[in-house]
Amino acid sequence: MPVAVLAGGLATRLLPVTAKVPKLLVEVGGEPFFSHQLRLLRRAGLRRIVLCTGHLGEMIAERYGDGAGWDMQITYSHDGPRLLGTGGALIRALPLLGEAFYVLYGDSYLPVDYAGVGRAFLASGQLGLMTVFANAGAYDRSNVWYEAGRIRLYSKKEHRPEMRHIDYGLGVFRATAFTDRPRDAVVDLAEVQADLCRRGELAGFEVKERFYEIGSPTGLAELDGLIRAGQLGR
Image (cartoon, rainbow, N blue to C red; front, side, top):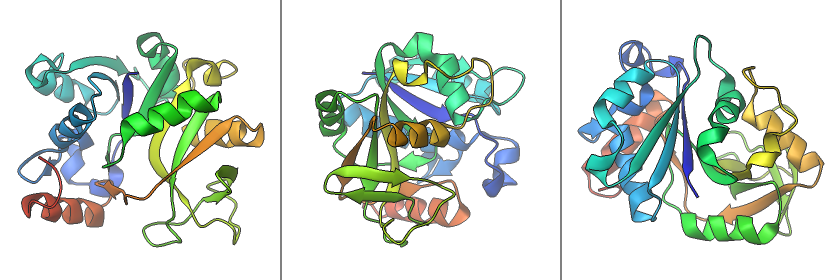
């Protein structure tokens, strides 16, 4: 399955750095963050990438091209004149993604068993799968009630004491999960996932490895330090 990388946001939390470069090109450990993501995905055996770009996306295409230099295949789906949100960007990219695909955020570094996640998704027969991590509020606000191998509730708005897990940031979807959504409109992927959960069509997969991110100055500094120290990446 290909991997859709959502990289179209404005990255306002990293200003002023992201005023002139997109988040994927922010330097981490001496090179653009996307280089670390590509190595991680390539090690997992994932070679087909669809980049959903928006803000300064042309700079990413100029730097990485079609991915041949990385022994990868990279294609691009651009939001157009206005940002479409995480779900809207995926919907626009559906012709490039095919029947089923992984979804990864452009600020996430996730050292996880991608093949195992993909197998679990295919075995579930569901329209979507969300990876979850037993966060217990440690890294960000927990937003998933995960119990007995099932996602009972996912919500970024509602908070309940049973929510001890968090959306890890790696999902898998069938294209049909987006059938009833408008094209070329702003759509939030979290709303799609919440709807799938309510309908019993969102599988859950618990991971034990913690997640890393560069979406905040604190997360960026942490990952930069770990990569420079040789504890992650490369």
